[in-house]
Amino acid sequence: MRHRRFLIASSAAIAGTLLLAGCTAGGGAAEIEDHSKDFGFNAEGLPIVDKTLTLTFGGSKAALAPEYSEMELVQQWEADTNIAIDWENLPDQVYAEKKNLMLASGELPDVLFNTGLSDAEIVQNGTNGTLLPLEDLIEEHAPTLTAILEERPDIRAAITASDGHIYTLPSVEELGLVAYPNFLYINKSWLDALGLPMPTTIDEYHDALKAFATQDPNGNGAADEIPLSFRTDSFAANPHDLIAALGGQPENNDHRIVRDGKVEFTADTDEYRTGVAALGDWYAEGLIDPESFSQDDVAYLSKGKSGTEILGSFFWWELKEMVGDDRMSDYALVGILEGVDGERLASVSNNQEISRGAMAITRANKYPAATIRWADRLFDPVMSAQSNWGPIGVTLQEDADGILVQIPAADGESEGERRQRVAPGGPKITTTDDFESVVAPEPRAKERQDLVNEFYAPYQANEGYPPVLLSNEELDRVSFATADINTLVKEKFASWIVNGNIDGEWDGYVSQLKTLGVDDVIDTYQQAYDRFQKGGE
Image 1: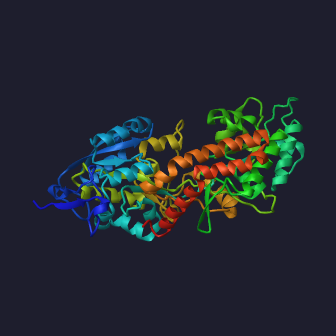
Image 2: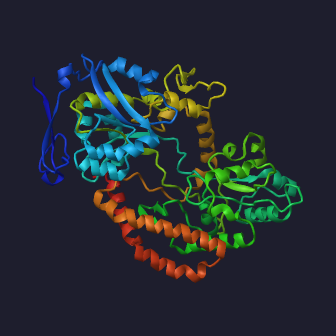
């Protein structure tokens, strides 16, 4: 039997054209033979193999997910392809505890599905030969993904390591939501009770908070109102847009933005200083919840549902989650306020819609051609929709226009809970165009999408940093320094607002940032950004 040979060589030995390039754990060269033809491999059509081929899959799964072999969609995949899967996927926390031991031991499944690999782990396990490079396999045996990557060089760049190899497959869901996670709401019933307009400027917003603090808008005779509450360094409760309105500095959790192709650090500018100082003035006036700098999500979310309505304004992803059904009508979305300079600036986060690590093929796999053909089917837009939300007839159905729409969840079950039980996840791509021609967003996602398009996207102040896969050397340069820098910024942000001492400490703070290597960090991110703009090469 003639077998296809895939060469794995160390990056230092790359001198010619290789079908697959990487390196073994020992750093030398090794050959992996593809035995797909032993099972009657078909280069096109279904089934993928004529004789049943069994592969082992490992990785993570949602907390409510059953054994993957019990999922209707997974059973359909096996029937269509003649590839059976021995699933070893574990709940996220359990898998996270076992992942490193598995990778270090060399006792690998054929495939990692929902890999849970960090960028550093992708690069490390790609360059040491644990994960197979996939770019040649994709080109030869994955026409659906190949076509997408040709049309979308940004997706190709996001999954391409600095050595030019692709070690993992992507998961993409382009709804335009995660760039704007921090929605600002205000208690409209309190505004009405006090005869105040819905604020549209930062000064009007300040005046509303001042009235909330001093005029007993909940009418109980007690000074128990919380004018403004937020959380720092959370996914969806950060006051970044207030810093932009008060000082003119777009900001996000990473303190790293892009403007006009230039990577910028945000937390050492005069504009940032001005915004934080102004929030310090607000705190001194009693407008900011003192627990904003220490509370966790549980404590934070409880404030919107307290027995007496005490919350005047807050940042959060979803109104209902914060205040509950009964109070939703009391609150309204503020959106982006006109700032002190007359501009509206919506800060853009670095949260990504293009994710890597959805699937990887390990060096234990003797059938990479059949495996990549199996994965390629998941990138068909209709199949991607089912992988993401569940099978047609269970969670999705066609409407009169042929668009897949959500079947309402049963009583007592949310769409999110149902999704965990029936949708395996893994590699998938649903683009902006797909959401118009293939599958409609979930109703709750569509509502947020409409709010983003009305209240936030028109005022985009910066670009988010793209999903760049840093090299080992770049990760070494930025990882520890970034952790120290972000810790310092978070500590000083809280201290300066609570104590009002930013002016006396600013110069020392800026000097400390330089000592921690902020300039080198930004230079490294700029280098990686430039590489990404060239397609990841």
